[in-house]
Image (cartoon, rainbow, N blue to C red; front, side, top):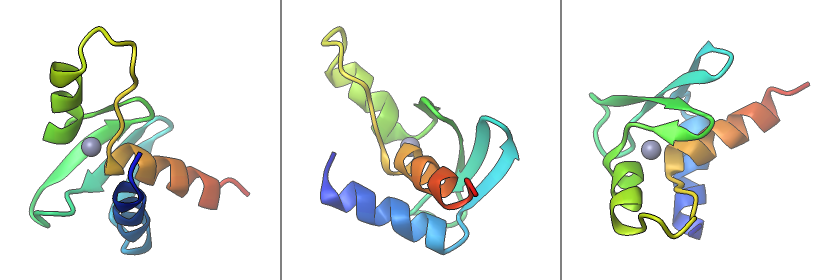
Length: 81
Ligand SMILES: [Zn+2]
């Protein structure tokens, strides 16, 4: 995963762009369009980057990632205690 993805993810968490809805369901603001948000779980995301990953890397056994999934990971770490 690129450093840019992690940087974006941190920013989303810092700016309050991550809202927990249920145990494994989060609503995360799009970093490119503040009007937009995505529903994200710990292993899936609605954003185009995530969907395209599987389109381009289908069947290679890779796990897709995006700044939103990464944001959840950071969010959980910060709120785990
Ligand atoms: Zn995403």
